[in-house]
Image (tube, rainbow, N blue to C red; front, side, top):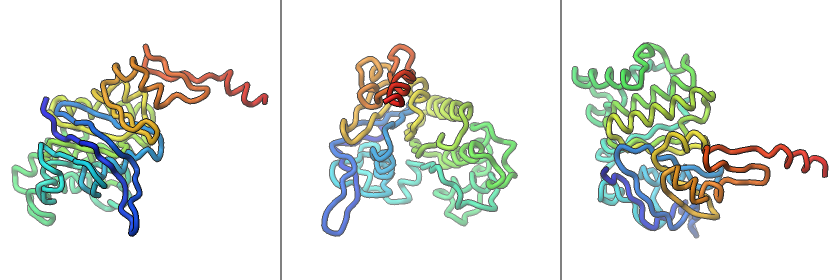
Length: 269
């Protein structure tokens, strides 16, 4: 497996007028082909900021982001658009467009925004619908689709972009329980079958533990810890990041148990 993205001593945050606002610091890790990697952590841990930094949407405060061995900032926007596709959760700004129109936009790095699709481009768009299993949605407008259907359309758009790396910001956020599992399984299948590097942020810890190839655990107290779900469960890392009073992690089954007796005791006090 090839390393596609590597971060070295990365500090993320925002540059203010007189000082920098640091969100995360000292982060080192890598993303490889054929793997689904999930970054997990509490709200405010810096997951979205990290994703934006990897995509070059915002600059790092210090450290390095290497994309295929090169500093991410050395690429032009046009070059990046052929290497990294990004799927965001909020698609409310896209209205009155059919799913076909949206997925076709994935070809814009090759045709230009107003470019005419060639027969080869149209074949790639059709294949992207097939790979995600949503051929029947092609003529439907996005506002008439469910949240899960919209997310699948955006993933098809990312596939039409034909990038080796796909980055998603909380793709399961608004989905019901079965749809969350289906979405994670879809992304795992695409990583394996298409040899993609797929990296996503999520709060669905138990799903990630069962489906992801690699996990990045991130919070302000412990920083960044990476590894396979099994290794991070066995060595206590998952408990260190996520255990709270009244919640206990089962290392054998990769699940959390709620201690209802703790809640009752707290109520009685």
